[in-house]
Image 1 (tube, rainbow, N blue to C red):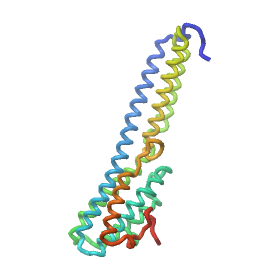
Image 2: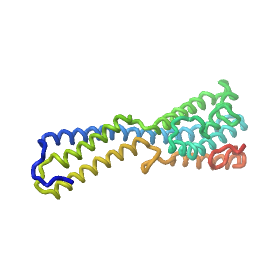
Image 3: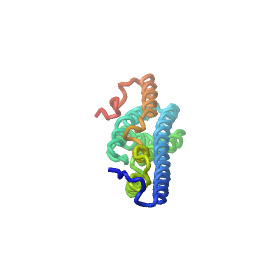
Image 4: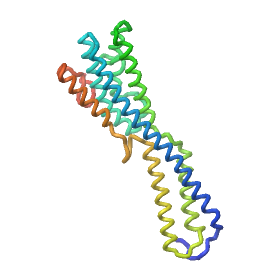
Length: 248
């Protein structure tokens, strides 16, 4: 219960610095979390864009069999990313270990790098394709790394302490003439600070929660290159299902 006395029990000069410091501190952390969210969204979009570029570049590969295999791997990779990678990130995965999309990037039976090795540096498209593949890999690693919370736990704990201290000092240490207005002020300030903490948490985990980044960019790329592959080769030649999982 908030006391009904008209004067606070502690000098009100202590309240303003605490509240201002809490607000500024949370604002700084919120700005950093917003940058994390923006970087994650950019990495996801860049990856989809590069996959589409690689698919277009494979059109200049002279060997029809190698072209088909590379394009099939790219279609399956895009499907695996929009499904398996996103589910893994939502569950807390922050590395490529064990993810389905790895089947289409490495040196396995259907991997792109296996095709690149078969091409060799003598092929005119080798440098272009391997450079684009490095961009794809960098974007994917950045996306996965940003799926991990970037705000240290000690900072999160400090924000909670500051919110508690601000609400506590407002509730008990401010002179009160109109209790209804005082209670309203405490509730509003508390709600704003708690909402700010929730926003920081959501932005700092860009692939989970109500603000989760969707795989829309990769979904669009997957649909586009799947259609192109179907037109050129036929969907039956894809070594994966619609989720990007290997058929064998």
